[in-house]
Length: 228
Image (cartoon, rainbow, N blue to C red; front, top):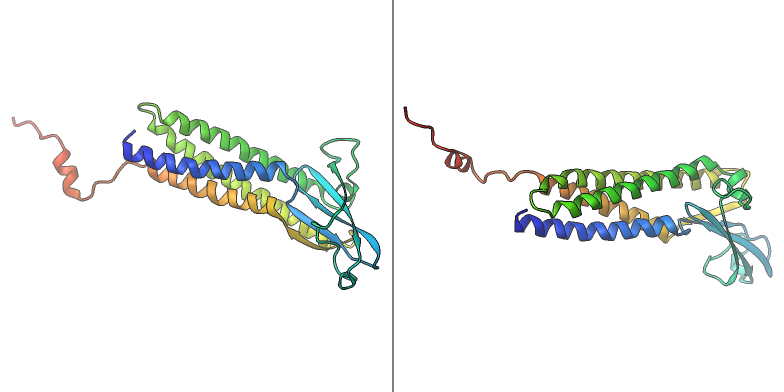
């Protein structure tokens, strides 16, 4: 690999590592969205919730501010007792009725499965890049770039599935939630999509053969034809 190309690959790989870290953080944390029910009365408790791909956390918050009445419970940063449980469809026996009964659990399962595919593509792409630094293995940059493009696409699909899940849950008459917002885990996933997808495209561009600066270079580099 030429030194100039090697430097470009190293810079791109650093950006990819940042994207992988962001996606891994999004997958293992449970702050994709925060849900709030309506506050009915003061000097009482309300139960807000935040969730990720694997579990739901409910937090009991004591409300004393008068302006909070009739609005959503929270913010989630207020002190209170928190109880987290993995979704029932992932760990049978655990209590997660809010997601098991009142929302489409298929959405959550799909989002988690697609996120796992994204992680698998990241591992394959990383192996291709590391192997490409070997002598005469530049050809591995192209499949590596494709793997990271696929990883980025899987990430944004997982984000959209989760967004649709939250939207349908808020719109449902069977749920108590009236307010929601996306939190930092969701932002990590969106950032991972941008970094991985663009880095994958960059690797594909880097792996392309260098075009001559002008048509005469091709003619000058050609071997002379033998004179009969």
